[in-house]
Length: 331
Image (tube, rainbow, N blue to C red):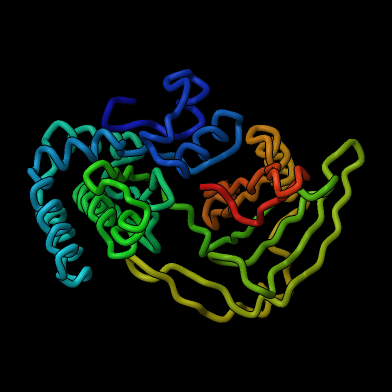
C-alpha cells in the first residue's frame, strides 16, 4: 500500500511498479537509497516510510507550529536551548496522531505481520542539518509502540543539535520535516554485520559477529568476475555488540568458536560483491554498503547505503583547474 502518508520500501513493491520512483524529499535520503537498491533486486529489510507529508499533517493537526515558533523566539532572546528544545519535543510526544494517518501506519505494520512482529523504527532525515544521532527504536512488537516511536522520531527534529544546525545555516524551523522508516528487525546480533565497497577490480568486505564493525573484524577481498577469487583474513573478533532492551546495545565477549570461525561463506561474499558492483553502477560513484546477516533466517540484507563524494573540479587562481576528491560523503 502506498499513500501520501505511507510508502512501501521493499523490493516486491518496487518490482510490481507500485511506486515508480521514491522521492527522498518524502521518505528521507537513507530510505530512498534503500528503496532504489531494492528495485535492483538487492535484498533490504521489508518495511515502509512514514512520509514528510505525514509529518506536516501531524504538526498541523496537533497545532504545534505556535509552540515551535514561541520556543524558538525564547531561545533567540536568551532562553537555554536545552530547555526550549525539551519543551518542543514534549509537545510532540503528547500530541495525538490524526486518525486517518494512524490507521494507515497501522495497516502498513499489519502488512508486515502486525502485533508480535518485531520492527525497528528510525529517523530518516531529508537534509544534513536535520540529522540526529542514535534516534532509533528496536524490537517494537505492537502497533501502539510503532505509533509512539513515530511521534518520538518526529520530535527528534527538535533536538538541540538539529535546532543548532538549522540556526547556523539559516533554515526555517517550521519548514523542516522528518520522515520515519519502519522495517522488520534484522537480528544481526545473532548473526553478523559489516561493510562492502568496491576498490579497483576487487570488493573489500569487513565482517564481525553481532552489530557494527570491530577493529578486529574479518577482512576479505572478492573478485566476482568470470574467474571468482576470494582472499580471506580472519580477524580476532574478541567481542561483539548485541541489542539491549528497546534502545541501545551492549558489548559481550565472543565464544572461542566465533573467534575461530569466519563470519561469511564464499557464497555470501559473492552476493555482497555483486551488490556492491550494482550499487556503484546505480549511484554512479563509489559506494559503501552497510550489511547485516540475520542470525535467524541466515539471509543478508543491506541496511544503509553511503555513496562517496564525486570528484569536483575547482577553478583556482591563475586559471589552473585542479581535480579534487573530497573524503566527505554526501547525505
